[in-house]
Image (cartoon, rainbow, N blue to C red; front, top):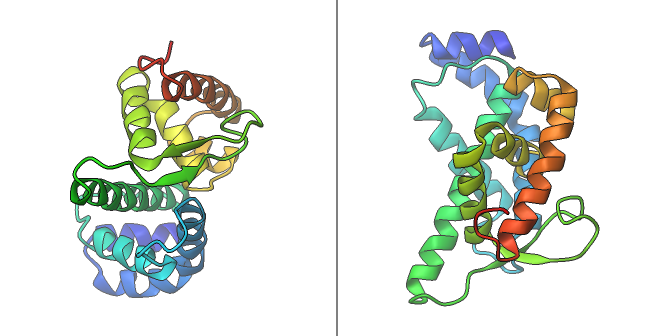
Length: 185
């Protein structure tokens, strides 16, 4: 897969055609994780989210593909952006109405069931990125991308222990931010 990514980056269009069947199932799995967190009756289906991600990936001409983990990290980030954009559009149409709710992963909220809207979560991750970009990426890759510690460590070029530590600290920071401490403290 890494070889196909590198060939695609070098301009080989046939590499993309060979790559898509290899990554389709994993992209479907990532999209399914995203869609599970969306409200019932969401207008976007899993396959449509994957297709939109494909379209954005094809337009990503300047990405310096490194490996499989990097590809799926970028894909997860694109899917997050697609859903956040849709949530913002819905809010704008409702003239400031309440945002769509998504359930946060139990690990993220330390075993307590909580709800937050996708726009608020995006704002929290953006604020965390301003403080610590790597911790924000760890949350994005684990929570949204479904990558495990080893895959995240590979994508971010850090140790798995660093990923574990970043995950613990980021969860605490996000919980404080989302519960009203807008600076994460």
